[in-house]
Image (cartoon, rainbow, N blue to C red):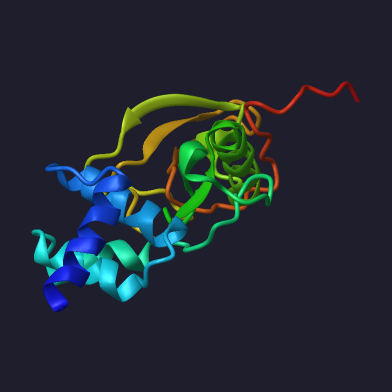
Length: 183
């Protein structure tokens, strides 16, 4: 009886695109967990039986928002129009319609970048070189800025370090894609 249950679960996973590659397995399992009527536990057990380690499975599940509702429009998502929305700050997965994903993710990233207010997304930032060691930091930095970019603020006329993974909350921030308003 247990064997038949696992076969049914693996059949559900295959229906949702289960493949050899790790990425295909992750997407198929996520889609099945969101849309299938089968219990999550049975699907997880089938994934474990078919080559997904417990540690990997735990990591996947921690980054999933499990729902049948589209993150973009709030309507129910169907299997034939299912896509994955990657949230901006925490890189969580959320179900969405294919048509809602690109526009919605762009809007979400714009809004989050405006909240972060880091020079990296500012229209006044002139890029320089990438920071390669912890010793090269900004005077106002609380975190190492490896991977950040040194540059110039054309508005304040000073050297700055921009980092895409940090919220600077600069009051002088103007998003690079914001419309220019005449004062």
